[in-house]
Image 1 (cartoon, rainbow, N blue to C red):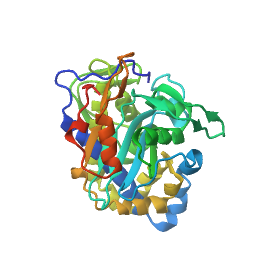
Image 2 (cartoon, rainbow, N blue to C red):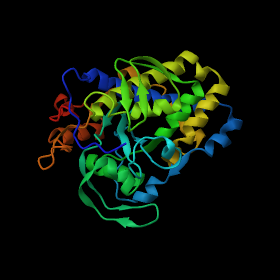
Image 3 (cartoon, helix red, strand yellow):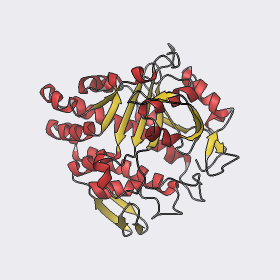
Amino acid sequence: MTESRHAPKTPAGGPPPRTRRRWGRIVLLTLLVLVLAAGGVGYWLYSGLDSNIKGVDIDRAIGDDRPEKLPTSGQNILILGSDSRAGANAALNTGKVSGARSDTALVMHIPEGRTKAVAISIPRDTLVTRPECTKSDGATVPSANRVMFNSIYAQVGPACVVKTVEQISGIRMDHYVEIDFAGFKELVDAIGGVTVTVDQDIHDKSSGLNLTAGTHRLDGTQSLQFVRTRHGIGDGSDLGRISLQQQFMLNLLSEIKKQDLLGSPAKSYKIADELTAALTTDSELASLTKLAEFGRSLNGVDPSSMETIMLPVEYDKVDPNRVVAAEPQATQLWKAIRTDSAIPESAKKSPATGG
């Protein structure tokens, strides 16, 4: 998959705000599916699943250069969907970009009481100041201005993504959760495929996807091509791909519910096995026991009450193909999240309408 060279534009008839709110609910539902599946297996199977989960010691990597944890700040989780070209992803015919990118980035805020949630999406083409960070090999990477947000993962690693988000928001991240795209391929194969309907032919040489208009049952490889397709639909921008991702996630969760996979310990284990193999978390969550305990603490969260807000951005004056945080809206938004207070309506509006 090649990097987008254009800030996403919203054409006439583009997805309404309700669709973006629905996407945020899907993210929360996906996290809940993961932890519920983990909690549904027998304890004697935990050791096998534990070995799947990869952990990142965020505290050690960042050190003390972090925002203070406020008593009223609730829980804040940085969720990344990684677009790696390593390992299983290397054989998935999904473009020639080397390294990895954080294709999706969400700051999920769960207020005190844990009965509702809000997710802040950070556009991947946002230009930010990357702070000085330490790589996994101990090397120090100096601070840099005007760095595209989704490149930080490849340049320095996940801990630096966390540090960047903390510095631009002033909010301490309590947890970090990363899911590799290849994990979706294995999950889809484990449940026997996902059905999607498209209203036009899709032929994308970059992703390898070829579908005629109509309804199709996708296997794991086709599903991964589907959520990565950009050139074969609409005007070739990220907007079309986002729409496909939304449809796919809805249908995936519908398939899980229809098969009652979480009602069967054996099937739950299979799901948990596939998902944990694609999962990287902060070290505090890097065990099935801790992950399941955290999931149970979210039982009071109603996905239907979740709100998704895009970080307010505006087109960069130097490079209109990129965006920057819009002020004062971005500061107002982060302050409301940081203090666990109501988000002003003005902080939910983005001058860059295509973001």
